[in-house]
Length: 303
Image (cartoon, rainbow, N blue to C red; front, side):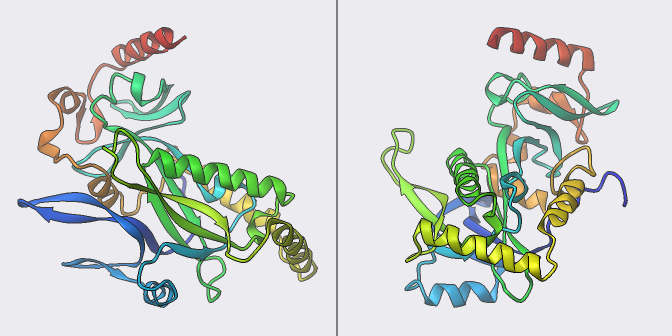
């Protein structure tokens, strides 16, 4: 296997609750109050909708706010890899990826492992440059049982809710998450920060009409039937784990320029001078020792 290449689940399309709009000559991210399922092909108007979008939308009276899904893995973290990510807004390259304790950062000396004090306390993450970045891989099509559709998000609400639901469903089902009948659900809430206007996030629930007791019982039967037919779920998950860690940056590089454009409302020219000074051509140009010293001071302050 080629080293340095992250092997992620095969992606057939995208699931989003936002889009990029053009306003005053600038391309800006805009939130939506429904899901959109797209293919991986774009034209000048944007992403082309996947045929499943029209099919599912017809069953939801036009507004697509629920999508029936199946998880590929029993391990919640394989379905939803997430970390803090500092993107280069001009190239879309991840410059720093961390978990709140340690990070992998591109520097003049290559990729280095450094402390990660979280975005609020990191001297290189000021101005909203570093965000939590989660990718949820779900199966929508029985025609390709190992293919996935990806939902990308930098929202705390979606990442926190999805992580909790995946962990809970895995626990109550006896680690048979991949056999549960689930659905993505769009939920809204208002906060002081949103000035009482609704903000939307993604939740995971059992499909309508299915009780938890019934879902758990059916999952056990499905898991037993698959095993009898020689399906090796444990081997599938081991292969997925090896693919994720095959790169020093545990992140999918495909389409990251689109990700940076969708999640960052600021233009590259609006990035603060300090951030521009920290990075050039996607590599840190500050002295690594000074970076480490600043991070150690941040960690000391937290402790």
